[in-house]
Image (cartoon, rainbow, N blue to C red; front, side, top):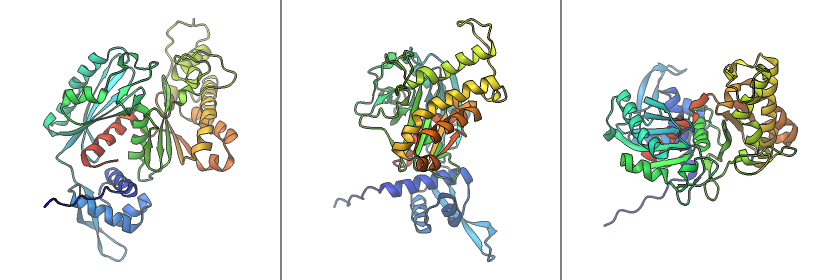
Length: 394
């Protein structure tokens, strides 16, 4: 007799599971009451989810040495280090990082190489295998231990066909299926998403127990894109190309964009444009084609002229984000990428525009901050995607 099929878990149950995996990975051993407090979930939801994780062998429950207020020792829930490991990749425009992690999201080994990712896809894919071998060696595990692979790429991926679409980025990758290519390299299931989507996943997975179900992650770098986390799930749109906010056009701006239009956000507020303006104010005698050695962006907050340049970029980005805030009413906007390292001047500029152009109630509800993961949001997001493929759906 064929066993009856089990119904697919509900979206709420999957979100509860993800929240428990994240908080246990962040804090280690916790009582059920502590899990409930940190996640905001009801005790009954926590109890059901803990039971599921224990049944699946992903968690255990032991008696802790600490006592409760009434003198009884509380049972502590801990994640078990799974025998299966995952492999994650962060593909940037000029680098590739490979990381080996366990199912708690802990990175055990990684390796990075600086490459021309946009123009040499075959060489980059070959390098990915070499980097994976180096990361596995650092972690002390063989490839046979890897259960799933995930990668973030800096370009638009059509989820209907799994091929790279947008010609303005990754032009030499157009028509390629990165998941299939990596699958052939590693003989494993592979999940691929764009880098901003992975950044949103990374921020959610490392929220420090303060899970946010409605979040916009902005990767502000050479391009500007947004990863959308709505009602606890990544939103990709009809064909997987949502979040292209870098190509929202601004009034009174005539700068040509690489997409062929004028006045796109990234043509006036990308890291390239910000650095060009910083070079102008910090090295006024330099010619436009001179290579000016600028301090790290995070060190420029105390330089008034530099802070004004960065703040203006923030106000420009914030003008676009204000419309998203009006439409989506997010709880948080997280700014990542190289420009996200600029700190307070950038965040204050974004905040100023959101407060000015968004409706007061939704502007007041949204937290705006720089990524706490720095440039590692995308890598941790790829780890999260690989873990979800290894232990259950996201």
